[in-house]
Image (cartoon, rainbow, N blue to C red; front, side, top):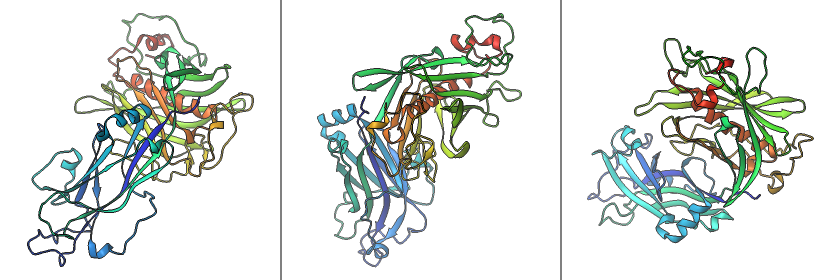
Length: 467
C-alpha cells in the first residue's frame, strides 16, 4: 500500500532585530540595555491545538544586520516543528483559523529562562509583537511551500510607534510533505499480535510477532510457558530477563527481532531499575544465517513530580558499532506518550522531542550511510514490498524518522508506529522499526516496580526465573 499523507511545519532561523539607539526617537523606550551577545528574547510558537513551543532567540541591532541576507530558505536552526496527519489537514480546511501559525515575541530582563520554559508570564517579560501567517496545508501535501523567509515587523505591541521604530523578527517558515508508513499492532506485543499497515480506513496484514523468553537453563530463545511451576506466594526472582519479540513477514521468514540482552534488575536496596544500571535490548536484522545488530535501546525508571517516567536512550549501529545517540528522553509511565526519533536540521525540533544525533550522517532506516539503498536479504521475498515506492533521497538521515505510541502502565496497548518513507527501502527496514516499537512498549513492563505484579502473559515466564 501507499504511504499515508503527512505535512510537516518547520519554523527556524529566528532572530530579533532592534533599531539602533541613535535611530530611535527619544520618546521611544530605549533598547540600549539589551546585550546582543546574551539571548534575552524568546518566542512562543502556536499552531492550532498543538502544545505551544518556546524557543530562545538571539538579538541584533538594525545597523549590524542591514546588509545581512538569508534567502536560501534552508533552516539551520530549528525552533519548532509540527506534524499533521491527513485527517488533521482535512479538518483544517473546514476552519481557516486552524491553518494560522502564530509567533509571539517577548523580551525579558536578565538571563532567567525558566518561567518562559514553563509558559508562565512574569513582570520582567514584555510582549514585543506578534507575527501570524495562514498556511496552505493542502498544497503542502505534494510540494514544499516557503511561507516566509526574512524579516517582518513586530507591530501591534504598542500603538503610535513611528515607522522604523518597531523591532523585527527574522523567521524562516517552511511547510513540506512528509509521507509516512503507518503500522498498527492488533494487540499487546507480549500477546504475539499481528501488525497491520494502515492507509486511511484500509488495513493490510504485513507482519506477525512472536513473543518469547529465553530459558536461562536450556538456552531455548522462543519458549513460552503456559503455566507457572511455582506458587505466586513464593518470593519472585529479582530480575526480568530473556524476553524477545521476533517479527516475521507473511511468508513466515523472520525479518527483525528485539532481544533483551541486559536484564532489568532493581538497584541495591530498592524496587526500581535505575539509570545507573539500565536494562537493554538489541534490535536485530537478519544477515544471511545470523542476526546483525541494528540498534540498542536502554531503559530505566525515573522519578517524577506527579508520576514516574520511563527513561530511555537509543543508539544506532553502523558496521556493528554503536554510533552517536539517536534518541534520548522519557515517557510518563502513568499517561504514556510517544517514542520519537527526529533529526531535523541536525537539531531537536522541540523541547519534548528527544535528543538527536548532531551529525545526522547515517540512514536510520537501513543502518547504512546516507544515499545507499541496500537490497533486502536474499530469499526473503520482500525487496520490493516498500522500496519500490521511494525515489533516491539525497539526505535520508534528515527529518522525521519514526514515532511509536506508548500507553501508560496497566492500559491496553496497541502501539501505532509511523516511519518516514525515506527510511524504508525494504521490508526489513520497516520490521526493524516495528521491533523497536515493541521493545519500547515492553520496557514499560520491565521497568515496573519489583513490588508489583506483571501482566499475566509476562508472569507466565516465572518458571524461567523471569518475573
